[in-house]
Amino acid sequence: MAGVKMRSADLLALLVARGETVAFCESLTAGLAAATLADTPGSSAALRGGLVTYATEVKSHFTGVPVAVLEAQGVVSAATARVMAHAAVRETGADWGVSLTGVAGPDLQEGKAPGTVYIGIWNNAANDGQEFAAVGLGGTRAEIRRGAVDQAFDFLAECLAAAPVKEN
Image 1 (tube, rainbow, N blue to C red):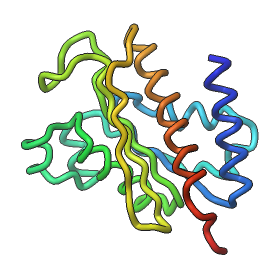
Image 2 (tube, one colour):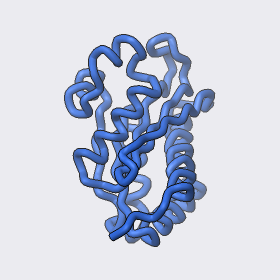
Image 3 (cartoon, rainbow, N blue to C red):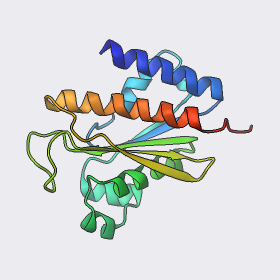
Image 4 (spheres, rainbow, N blue to C red):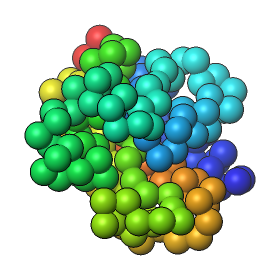
């Protein structure tokens, strides 16, 4: 857990230095990413909030993932992660949206194995998003969920490093 706390502190410092904010839309992690960042002192300077959209119908209703996308590509997909990340920004006014959807196990979901995770990152300034697949995370449900949060923080840090700082 120390690794996650270090990552969250580094991520928070990066967001604060840039004067930018983040929000989360989480499925398999059920709020763990937002809670992990919130555990870091000073998090209120960058954390806007989050949505937990665990059930499929909640995901569709609150994030706007089209039913056609859910039927064609599934809940655990890059397309769903992208829409979820955009919803995090749209609903909170954050500069960055991060989403996590996947299979924590122990059973398959939509034919996808436990450890299959998709992470979406939405950059409000660019009005664009990216999706990342973190396929193959292993371990228990808790380890897969923690690993997904680690990956999401890493992917967001990469996106922050590649993006221009927003103009105030």
